Amino acid sequence: MLKLKTFDRYVLHQLFVALLATTGGLAALIWLTQSLRFVSLVVDRGLSLRVFIELTSLMIPSFVAVVLPITTFVVTLFVYHRLAGDRELTVMRAAGLSPFLLARSGLICATVAMLLTFALNLWIVPVSYRDFRQFEFQIRNKMAAFLLQEGVFTKLSDAMTVYVRERDHTGMLRGIMVEDDRIPNSRATIFAERGTMLIVNDQPRVVMYDGSRQEIDHKTGRLTLLLFDSNTLDLTSSKSDQVRPRDAAEMSLQELINPDPREVSERDRGKLAVEGWRRITSPFTAFSFAMIGMVAILRGAFSRHGNILRPLFAVLAVIGLLALNLLLQNLASRNMILIPLILIEAVVPGIVCALLLFASEVRTAGQKIPSSVRPNA
Image 1 (spheres, rainbow, N blue to C red):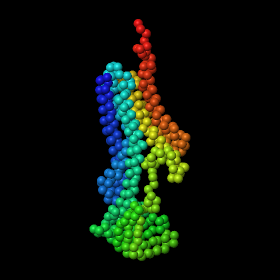
Image 2 (cartoon, rainbow, N blue to C red):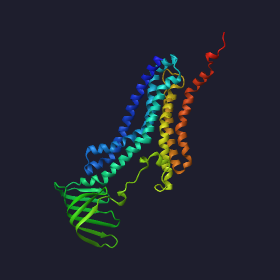
Image 3 (spheres, rainbow, N blue to C red):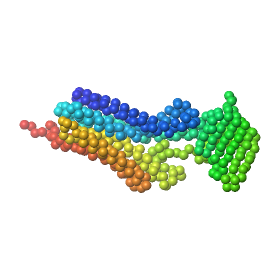
Image 4 (cartoon, rainbow, N blue to C red):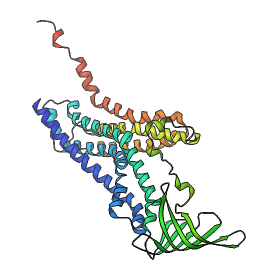
């Protein structure tokens, strides 16, 4: 028993260290590529590096939830393949360890990965993604308005550009020009001698004094000129930007499975249901993928020269399951009757691999006669 515990600790140490390094490295790589989309917020709107890192780091839990089942398979396959290549599995088999005892460390690692994926999918990712969307919304619609640079044409949105000649120590803006294209077929240009920034109902606005508003009607070609002593301008890009739409990734599991019919159209119910079942079933894929990796190494005869075919088949099997999962999600979003197939696709491969790996051991144990029922000599 002491040797068995030592072997388990030895394998678990390799599994968890490799899993942490692989998952962290892959998540960091995805974060780096995805965060490039927000570089424009730093370059164009002058956000600090701290705000940029704080914003993009909220996406990391969602990256980890996606890559964890895959990295669990890669790590399990790699560690057990290395143990087989170093003849360590051969020695353990010769010492009398059964396939279950050899795979126990991998089963523990797969179970931990599965539970962690459950926590990510059902709690951590929805909360972090909701905070990310809210933070991004505030930056684009409120914070950016306070980052107007002197002597620079600041593009707040595709429909609005603001120029400020200078800003004094009290925060007063001087020499303001606004190009406002938010109303279709009507372009307005606003000039003001001075102005100040305000937040009204969590929306950025600028109060301008002593200015004019020039507007051209594209249908008639007429120019309308309006002089004003005081005018308040909303700096959000459109009316729809005043209320942030919710994304399926930030909804709770209850909201996805049983959406409010007043908020969700019948056409979108299938997409929400698929997202909810994806959160429930994807943790099981971490366990199933790990079982595929262990079956590829532990089942079959030992080869002195190594066997690259079984690991290759395992990789192809996981790639096929990932493709099948995407196909089923796409089909189930259109026809909700197919949703149970997503659960079957996630669970059945793990059950099949467990039967292939441990069935012979169970049969052998069942054929043994307990000593308590043996006849006396």
